[in-house]
Length: 117
Image 1 (tube, one colour):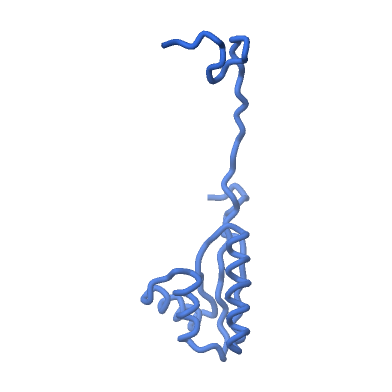
Image 2 (cartoon, rainbow, N blue to C red):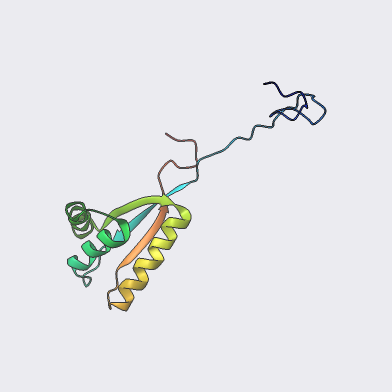
């Protein structure tokens, strides 16, 4: 059955065609959440944080923890800005409640938003 009332998609009420505007969308900028090494936060706590807040499997969490321990920092994950900042705040608050000085940073992913590949 054909509609003759002009109410179809892409048409005005009087049956005329209309131009639909196309809008360009861009992907949101991504941020890396970094865990920074310190001499006081227990390795077990870092592994727990990675499992609980960043949904890492135990083996992956241990590898990231070792990178933090040996290289001074490790990437917990890559997220949009709001998510990254929320995770930093949540983990920092948890660490302080437990008496640990664990520090985290959210920094822009390399090449994000600058036309680099």
